[in-house]
Length: 196
Length: 160
Image (cartoon, rainbow over all chains, first blue to last red; front, side, top):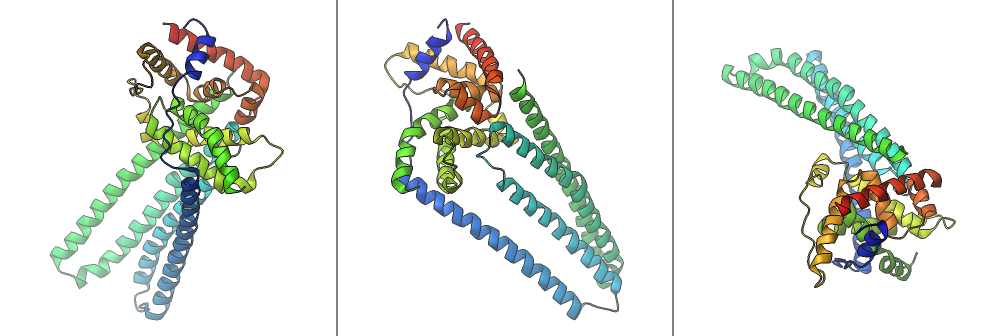
């Protein structure tokens, strides 16, 4: 092979190797199923989140112990932090689904980079804030838990709380590292695409 | 788009898209097959949004190229295809010499940068420069320079 024509000829004469696992009709069926599943999952997520939020608010307003406003505040902080993080994750998922594959490669790279910037912001700002809210809520609850449980069980709650904090911090760190690597990968490849 | 229209499109374009994906994913048949399926699922799901003034081939290639790029978004997927050892290309004919050459060619394509890899796959698949420029979103002049350089690099690598 001495020139590009030889490469082209070799390429043209290769066996197509098409793996016809699915027929066009099966692809259509799979595609419709996938579309319906996505719609169902989206609806289910919204329903579960809405019902849970309404349920928690209703429970707190009806049965919340007004004698211990700190407890209500601490619990609200913990639950609110979790919902904030879950909500952001869901928004991020929806944004990713909106990346239009029918655009040019250049535009697709730009949209993916914008999405990645949002992911990084979530990981660097929202996730630590949410974790902090959860930890503060947990710490506020501890003085109320202590007299209500045995010393052993209290130590167990404390220990597992600390373990959870360390474990989740490692996960967040690894996630941020991955998101940063992906950002670099996207930027490098975008530069290569535009480079002449 | 009717089911018959889709079948015609699938029969015409799926071997080309499969080959593009196979080249992009360093000859990995399973991944190429998965992405080809995914591309045609999207073609069916999004056919309402296809603007008739555009070329259908450009539209399908746009979805295919972007699907390949998004697949490598996951770090684990990127690592999978960074390997130096390429998968064996199954004996497609009696000519083992050609198989060796083909494997060498896939190896050389895999060494190219990802955007360049996709561009050369479209060149090899016979798309016009005008169509490739529309898929990628760069000017034809820029593309011409890029393709010249990629062809040179690829030829040098294959003749080594």
